[in-house]
Length: 446
Length: 169
Image (tube, rainbow over all chains, first blue to last red; front, side, top):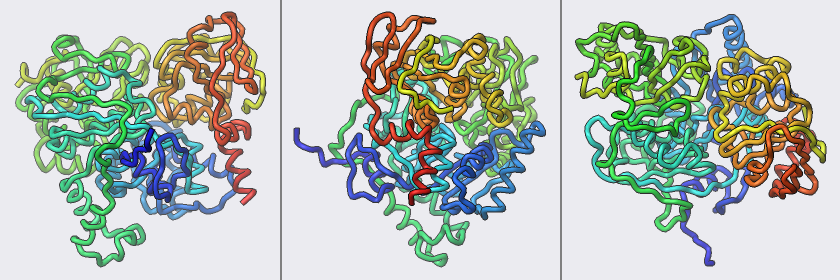
């Protein structure tokens, strides 16, 4: 068999990260990530790192740390954990540290433009696949591995096989990127993308807003993917360039030449880093969807791949609706919910919890009047962060209760109570369900 | 905590497909439960409440596809290590769990045939040197780990492996 010289995105990104001209699929490389992410787990990682006997981190400027998973601290133990992280950050001079209330790591690092196209980000968080939205290689790793990166700057990674998923055409009204992701996972299973670099392409993908694009690679963690990838276009470059330009962070900015770099030079630098798969690159599997065939879907208890059409489960009573998370807590998501609930009231017996993904989202949602609309309808607004997603606080269900959530994961016990059920849906469906008191199609409510 | 033994012998605890990190070690404990004994006590709490009290050193977990899917939380692997689990045998593993297991010296063995054949509660032997699983249904071969990854497991996990690497540098 002749060697295929055409390269996938994963090959190009990991060759770059390993400092090699070219890598083969299946090759194990020592990769040097551009960014290493951790959050409330940073204190635990520090305790592992201390076993290495180092006084200073090898790569403090490549760390990005957010407090987001249980914020503000719900218990003394959580507060001690945060305090330990703050001491560590101060002691090591870690610049990219984001306090309680700034928001969820994946959203914040995107807003801060700390990850650029073509770069490698490894994080102690399974949804680090998120950064595929901007054409970076993002993968989740464990705490010991993050500690290893702090000490050595590199980690072994196997160059994965790739899967190509193409979406063509125009999505029907009300059908979102979340629905597409649920459909893919429902069709191919929670391990359908196991160990794979899952690439997306097609006219529908490039037509998505940036907020919608973020949903797809985020959800691919539930598909078993190592990373996911959407081809970065002008919109992505513009989004990042504006943020880089506005911040001009000393040190980190050095990669752009100098702090006086023109906006045009910043754009050129970001564009030059973009990586695209070669035509003819090898894919382990290819799947094609027609946007017109898609509808709204629901991830049913207790597995993300237990997917039903909205119509099949509409009418299921709920006691809690949760809008937020790194999957669907952005401005557009709050706008979609506000449009559904405007002038209506949350059903009796239902809590509607809305948690913006970041402080910037909260500020923009206030300015746009969405928060006013949501609160008038009976929603409660939480501090930007992960909220009740993984059962720490701010909306833990009682046994026997049902939650509909815009999150990405619905495993038994995920929200803190094993005897509770979680349904996953797009933001408008979550909002409509809050109004109806049962899983509902937004078209029935508006 | 280290599984450097070349022969692992114990009883099988058998589960199904997609055993996820929330049922292995609930997310609500991830920032507050830090002691090893306490981490061990919560293992599989929402899947099999009899597990933590009944598991013995050397026992093996046997499961179907996509074992360990979900979160990156390392306690999903360490809660098994702290209970003395000798190995996890599954049809396939979620990639972060797989790394976390090996990085903590816990053998994660991909062997769909053995995962299916092994009966709950029966004695199982894993011969690490020979890459063989022995159970009531017979012998099953499993693919060996790469030399570099086996190096991490034999060092007792990633932390020990990196310590040696840093000391040698």
